[in-house]
Length: 311
Ligand code: RIB
Image 1 (cartoon, rainbow, N blue to C red):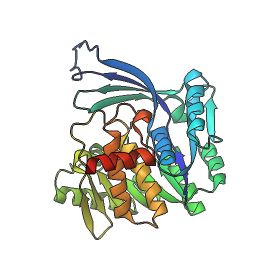
Image 2: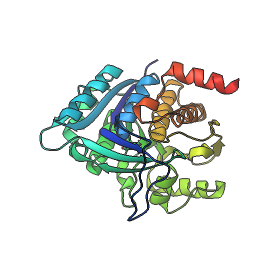
Image 3: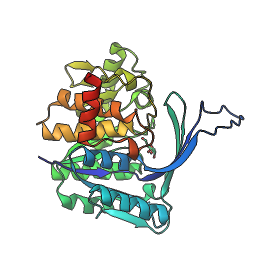
């Protein structure tokens, strides 16, 4: 079964520079490694991942009425994404992310949001006419749009999966109503709760704190090379990661994780542990490749990757 997934979120063009290490304040470093412009944005990465992993995806986003906006929309269409609810903004430019990737594979990202901040409740209302089974969102758009989408999901009986990136301490989680899954990474967990999820006890404390702020069936903490931590309000589980050695580039690993989780969860009748195992495998795959879209696997690529790991 192909679940219909509505992704409401951002589209960016990513300017990716690779370097041995990122510069410190006031420093200029010369790196002749590589640079590239690749499609990205947390919403778009999620939409592409959910499509490649077996979802029937509708993407609601805003891009500028410029060459990047046109290129990105065409790329989504070629992926097989339903692009009817993409708006071309006459007043704002397409979002741009500057991503510095270090030799360790870790990154620093700064985003110029542009048209993403103009995504409106009206745009999202239109997208709900596609009758989605699930809504997947991140926080890289205007917060009023996130709140409106959550309200529409409630009215339509649609399950909500929220990836908490990028988090801000004052985001009003309380206004979102019931979530199916809330999934922050380590940094976002710290920003939202003040708790660093660096031990089982702290993971549990952070999950309880998050559940107190927003009713969620499950909290799934993405812990990078430590796997993920799942809490259902009573029980907790720590799932080990897939061992991939030194990462090449962690960009989009979290986005693809949440997309994978949502697709598998909607397919397997809500088995959260199975969905998290699958999402861990997808996240592991993504960090072995450079860039956002280029690193997201199809189901066949994922299968081959896991088979190789067993050999
Ligand atoms: O999560 C990775 C994404 O964050 C990048 O593709 C970039 O566009 C920023 O939004």
